[in-house]
Image 1 (cartoon, rainbow, N blue to C red):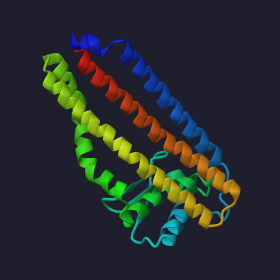
Image 2 (image 1 turned 120 degrees about the vertical axis):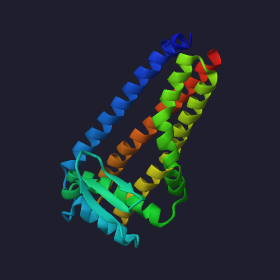
Image 3 (image 1 turned 135 degrees about the horizontal axis):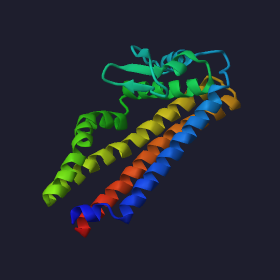
Length: 228
């Protein structure tokens, strides 16, 4: 009975909506990134160069800047205070590379300035990693065994994952704000600032979509428990 109600028409709609939203978000960021990666940044600074410049302008020292494989795999890791840029963004001197590099440098600035939402996000990472790994196993165990307590526990674990995604939003928005603020203070042209805004907005949209989809999933699972 549980399985029948889980895979109803609403579940199918949720899956399709998630795939469509996720696909559109990925297409949008790929399009914006591709467009602005073909336009050189004045001054010929690579992503690594401009990340260093932004950190220096914010009086942040000791951040390692590394080159890693992959496309748009850029990230900042507070555990070792390192900023990792994908090969294209590390080496290229395009507006897109600069925008991505400055965004990640923004996270390093957050860490150095003890930005509270960032501290909260980092603190709950271990819990979220555990919750995201086991919630689906607990959920299906509850369905197969018919144990309502397992299903409630799984939904609580999934709610922790959703909370993490919601906390992530202000952290990402603030990193982009810091990136754009640096670009303005560095005296870049309106064209460069336009490119920054478009790339950073597209990147932010992926986080918004992920959070939205997760919220819809949580609402569905809560409704699932009520129906059963």
